[in-house]
Image 1 (cartoon, rainbow, N blue to C red):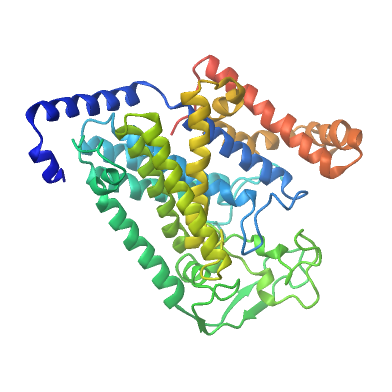
Image 2: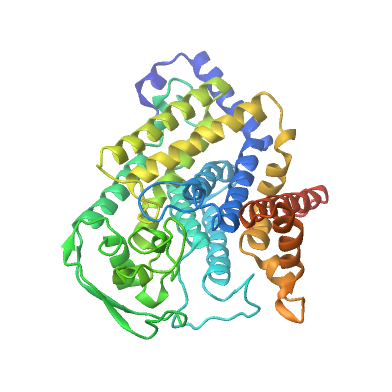
Length: 468
């Protein structure tokens, strides 16, 4: 992999090059990348914000189908961060056997917590019950998607690890060249995804309405398709693969498309179904399904590449130039694909334009944090993000998944809705501002995000971290 240039160098040049690369790698290993912690913390904060306030502020919630709102950047940001951390982590692991063992153990932990939190077992924070009917367990979710991407890309990193190549300080292309096998695998993943997405025939299908509050409860509704290569809600290959492999009873029962114009009277807000709403509006759909998770691996590979640049580039300006140019190219390319109607931006399908746009945005956002924190040395204004980022699993479970709120709601007075959390929302935030919309937003910012930032800060002070 070193090329002719390496073989033709004089011995003194080779020695100096080896010393520089070795010093750069050692410095990267010794110093924690604070900007990555801050970026991770920001992503957790965004998740809390869009999940708990998105119902009142739909411009930050998930796009009902095509398009890209603030909430739609959360998952790709997580995957990018996971990818970027992989090269940093494997620099500390002495052999491939130990690396594979750590990868498998962490993957199992992620899947376990994903099933507990999003498989239907936990009903927090609104219901004071737990347990799931295995006939309706949801197999996929956020942590499961992260687990799949982490597993595949980590094994790819182990298999293609090349030590410390001597020609990595030459030019922008060298990192791509040394890790070209990873990009070849990425290209194969993209070909498989696009082939299945556009080449799979989607027949007619049916489903049973299991929502007891729905007037159609218990009815079997039919959806007419019989097409190939469609990217609309009822007849895309992503949903078809999940229905065939996972089973329609194991998919997400509250998809974002119920807020689309075809379904909701209050679109883009959730509301009663239109009288002429098509049958598929009541159908389940898995936004973290099999085919879309295959496409999401591409985001993690982009993150891995940025991690390679961080390790193998000596100067800040070289790193930033690489991240910025790649991020800008991906961002613009994704926008062009969408607005030329070539490939629409779609988080539910994890379309290729969506991969490009969000991965490019992730590279640019990280570059901004890197300049402000690791170069200019002003991390203090981002301390809440840093604390949350260093204890991301704790804040994700307790705040984003509502486990702590569910625990508090378990202590009620006279009525299950008469709890401390409901009282704070009603009397301190909504009542004072006389606006449910503003009140909920302020409650999420102060009573959830800032509260858990302080908790994470205290945990950091005493060296307490929840790691998988």
